[in-house]
Structure formats: structure tokens, C-alpha cells
Image (cartoon, rainbow, N blue to C red; front, side, top):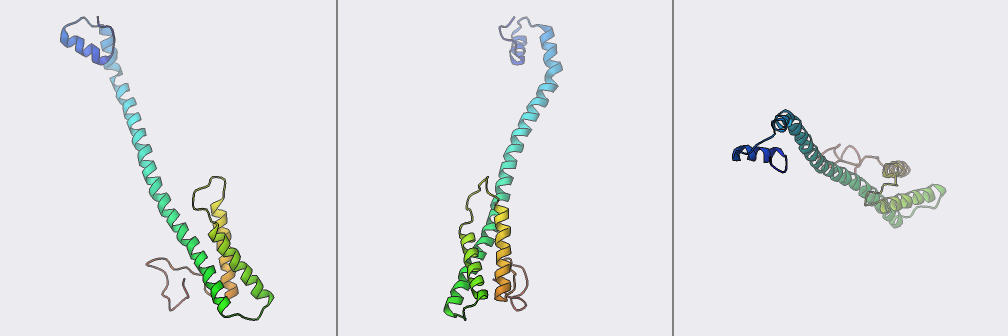
Length: 162
């Protein structure tokens, strides 16, 4: 009898005419389906993990680009309006001071927005706060609060877009 009793060794022993344990050979036949199922499960799991990682990367990159464009828009909006207001100074009032502070805070929030994924930070809450501050600035400035999407949105004649 062969020293090691794997299904492959038993098959080779049969070819070579050696004596084979029939119970072990029968067990190989009976357990063939179980081994094939286990191998299928393992291969499927490996393939699923790889596909999931690729899909997650694509979705994450697209969502990250979308959020980055929005944050960049807010930074550009705040910087532009700050510069416009410096060139055309209006009388100093509490409303003007509040607007200046709101624009500065919007710019600093956008500039400090994390470029990397940080587990301990609530990025969505920071984004909601920025959106609220942007809406407040738009209301104080008297401009529409819409950011046009690339290739879509309303025509510029109907609403001011940035």
C-alpha cells in the first residue's frame, strides 16, 4: 500500500497496479462532491473579494471626485466673492461684517477639508455644514444657490450658476 493516502496517490497506485484500500477509494468518490463544493466556495469567495475591491475603488473614486468638485466650488465661490467685495467696498455694517466672516469661514472650511479618508472624522457632517454656510452666504449676497452640474442643469440665462 502507498505511504500517503491522497486521492491522487491512490489513482497513481491503481495505474501502477499496486494494492489500494477500497474503503479509502470509495470515500474519495463519495467526498468528491464535497471537495468540489468547498473548492468552488473558496474560488467564489476569492473572486467576490477581488470584484468587490475593484467596484468599491471605482465607486469611491467617483464619489470622491464629486465631493472634491463641490468643496472646490465652495472654496472658489468664497474666494471670488471676498475679492469682489474688496474691490467694491460697501459701507461697513453688521450685515457686511457677518457676510465677511461667513465667506472667510466657508473658505477656511473648504481649504481644511480632508483630502484623505479619515475614519474618526465625520466628513459628511462637515460637508453638510459647508452647504449650510454656502446657502447663508448666497442669501446674504442675494444670488441663486445653485451649482450647475457638468453637462446639465438650468441654462445660465435663467439662474446664476457658478
